[in-house]
Amino acid sequence: MEAVEFGAFADNGMIKIPVEYRKYYSADVRVILIKNIPNQNKIESDIQERIAAAQRLVGIASKEAMTLEDIRNERLARQ
Image (cartoon, rainbow, N blue to C red; front, side):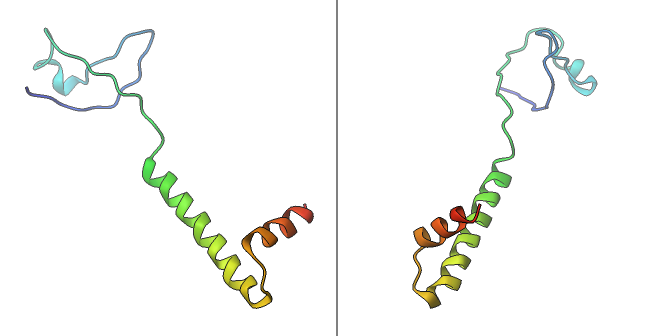
């Protein structure tokens, strides 16, 4: 099976084949639709940043013997 990948927007049920592929894929084709999701790497990066921030808070608070739960409660109490 020969395949190409390209991004496209569905407009009223129609997906346009990019010009560079039209002469090769103009008759009988198989279509597989995959919904685009936000960049997974960015999501994982954001999660890692949040974990690192929480670990820094634990490190700072460890001198005062506070748990992460104590820090969270203190933060929420100030909001």
